[in-house]
Structure formats: C-alpha cells, structure tokens
Image 1 (spheres, rainbow, N blue to C red):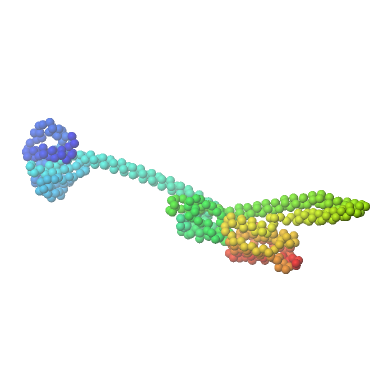
Image 2 (image 1 turned 90 degrees about the horizontal axis):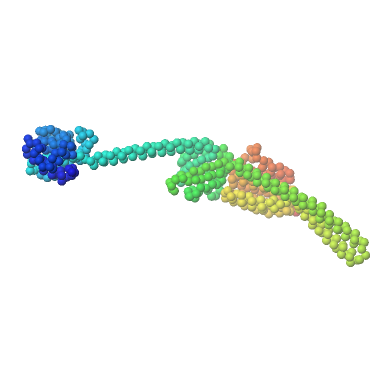
Length: 499
C-alpha cells in the first residue's frame, strides 16, 4: 500500500485525528482490518504519525518514523528540523488548508535513510498532523550520484594516466629530437616558431628560447624570388625541397627540408626537418664531373681508334690508287684513257684531303657537350630544378675558329666556374659574356651570390686553383674579385692572332 502518496497521507490524517481528540486512548480503538494494517505499517516503519495541538505542543507520536518529534508535551519547534518555524505553522493554522512539505530529510536515528515530512492543519480536530514517510527517490538519487562520482573518478584516473603517457611520449620525443643531428623546427600556421632543437640553436648561433616566436622565413630566407615556405600548400600534403642557408659563421650550407602538417586545418602546427646535404651535393657534382670526363675520355679513345683505322685503311687505299692511276696514265697509249685517269687521280687526291681532314677532326676530341651553348643550357636546367635563376648570356665568339688549345681552355674554365656557382654561390642572377676584341678573346662571368674571400681559399677545394693553372697554360690574364655577401666576378683575357 503506497502510504507515502498524498491521498493516502490525507486519509491517514483524517483517521488518526480522532486519536488527538482523546489523548488518553490507545491505538487499539482502530478495530477494522484496514486500521490493523495501518498499525502494522506504523510499527514496521512504513510511515510515522505525529499530532501537535494548536499551542504547538506534541500530543502524540505514532510509529518509529515519528521518533524524531519531541516527546509528548514538548514544543514541536524544539526539534532541529522544525526550529524557528513557529510563524510558518501559525500561518498554516490561519489558512486552514495547505501543508508544509520537508522533502528528503535525513534522520540521525535512522542512519543513512531519508524521509519526507508533511505537516497539515486539521481544523475539525484543531491539531497539526505530521506524516513522516520514507524518501525512496532520494536514496536512488544518492545511488546515482555515487555512481556518477565513481564514474567521474574513474574518468579522472584514466585522464591522468593518458596525460602521464603523453608526458612520457613527449619526453621521449624531445630526447630524440634534441639529440638529432638534423635541424628540427615546429611553427604555427602564421610561420612563428614554437620549438627549435639544439642543432638549430647551434647552427643559427641563437639560444633556443630566443628562437621562439621568430618567423621561419626570417631565420631561413629564400635566396631566390619565390619563397619555399608556402604554408597553405603544405597543409594538405607533405613537401620537400632543397634550400641554402648561412650558419652562425657565415658558411653556406645546403639543407634538404621535409615539411609536414599536423592538427586541424587553421589550428595545427608544421614540423620541418632539415638535413645537411652540402657534402652530398658536392659529391654528386663531383660524380657528374667524373662521369663527364670518363665519357669524354671514352669518346676520345673511340675517335682516336676510328682515326687510326681510317688512316690505316681508307687513306692508304686512296694513296695506293693515286699512285697506280698515275703509273697507268703515263704508260697507256690511249690519250683519252690517260686524260680520264688523270681526272680520276685528281678526284682521289681531293678525297684524300677530305679523309685526312675528317681524321684530324676526330683526333681533335671536339664534342657537342663541349659547346659553350650546351654547357650554359645544362647549367640553367640544373639550377631551375632547385630555385629560380636569371641566366643572361651574350656570346659573340666562334669557338670553332679559335685555336684548339685556347678553345679547350675556355670551355673547361667556363664549365668549372659555372659549377662553382652552382655548388657555393646560391645566386639568383648570373651574367656570362664571350666576345673577341682584335687580338684577344674574353670570358666574363658575374653572379650576385654569397661571395667569398679570395685571399682565404679553402684547402680542400681546387676549382679556382685549376682555373688559374689553365689560364697560365695559355698565357691568359685572369682576374677574380669577390667579397662575402657581394657576389663574384671572373674575367679571363687570352691573346690570339689578329684577324
């Protein structure tokens, strides 16, 4: 029987108000079956009843749930739950209707159990009826709250464990990055540095903390017209490129960069790893040079063999034919045949001259790859693979008309000078001029690269030394001027027979 509901509570109040009329009577006067059920419910704590007279004195307590009320004859407001409620009870008495509801009260005598206390004025009996019922909903709420607290505690523990794992992973990452021999940077989408490892600090000569919030394109500016730090493009897919930079001592270093984006678009970070490939580029250039020289040597050897074969076969056969035709022409009595043989002999001599010219051309080792136009074209194509380059060429010189020694020297010096620009200058503009002035041929090369100090040549680089030795070998005048940050200028002037 759900006695805690309001209709039942009002019924109980009406039935029990009779007890307040005869305070000396006991509960036994409730004789019907339903009254026996109520007595059983009171005894077993299903609900509790209390009666308070108009003077706010307790007249009766029924059931264990009403033991929180003061004893009979005491003021009801002496209870801690009703303290200072005299005015509220008096107002309830004056209104003659309504009730005072105290939900979810915890009674110390009942341990953790919660009850709901309802106080109503019965005008007929001129008394207050106090009904106390268990608050099962509050217990359920407490259980739910306890469950939520346990769940929250578990989530907090899991979050702490995840944070601990993240801290460990971050520590391992930083240890790996800090001990790396590569340059590692992390920066936001606006290009500002948020992390730089020790290698970056040493390379730039700037403390790690001082690198924070610096712009990536200011620390590693582009040497060409187009900046490689195209962050919008790198946000969708990883990118890699080669780029030159200067270290704290001013030395030029080539880096191969790998740039990747992590995090939501517009709010993540870029990570750029730069690997020093200066030695690799130099080795690659030296390997290319060695392959070119090996190819040239193989081709020269082949041409020399062909020249020997032509000389030993074709030329000797033509010479033999010329001699034999001359003998026949002198001994024949047929005048027409003699004239014909003489004409054939002249044609054979012309063929012999052409064969010897061909052999001479083969032995001169001239190749299409040695053509200055081809050398300049190959240089421009290689440079465009790494950065933008403005190559300006003015060539008014016929190399085929030059003496073989001077032409070969000019080709080799041109090739070596361009190779030095490719490897070390990091130039954006290169000007090349080839011309002839009366009894001199001139080669002039300028670049706007990083420059160098000619008074302090590097002991492990022999490019400039080779250029000087070649210039001396043909009696040419060589001038090289440069300074750090101001580019370089090479001027070669070789004497030649006047036209």
